[in-house]
Image (tube, rainbow, N blue to C red):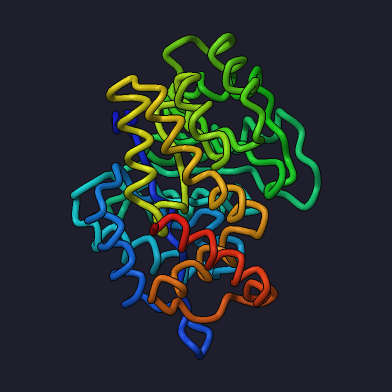
Length: 296
């Protein structure tokens, strides 16, 4: 039977830091994870796009998952990204996440060949049968190369363990349509940073964001204003303040921009995993100006 782990609010997506020798820096990962938990986020999610999931081998992924769970130490839920090209490896990582104490897993269908809906369905169904953890179905055609319609996502939600949807297409209409076809109480989450306010207004239970590394206070302030206080005027003000940063990190690529932002804020996170390159210097300066404005 699947566990009932309600995720809500700000779900902080952690970067995977690297040492100068190219290996994952687990000590720094502990520090960054602990810092994010202390900031007040409602959940932690390693091994997403920001965490360079596709660029890590199995051993590194397992080390990141286990290190994160131990660093969080039960203070908030941990949702681990377990996506892989094959169903067998996705099952492997889901089972590992469950074994080390994760609270949920997230899966984006990834494939060299374009998968049919039946292939995607069987992929999720097989993983769901292999673990008791709740599964978040992640739709992001820009990175995974596959687009799952609201109607198909509603079908996935019929699988007992598939209990959540993360929508990252940047189309707010998708979220409204999902509520129409899957029911008003569907647990959906925003994965498109510039849509955070609109998504909360549409009924999103949470915002999955790497911005929590750089501006945790503002992300939490937005959630409190729009969800807890229902103060849309205040929500608009705090959202407009952070919107330039949200747009910037999406346009520049999450690992690059978050790494550069952390370094500007005083934390060196090491080189990116090739073939990724650091943010160009001209864009670093643009990011510096944005962060300076937010600090004012």
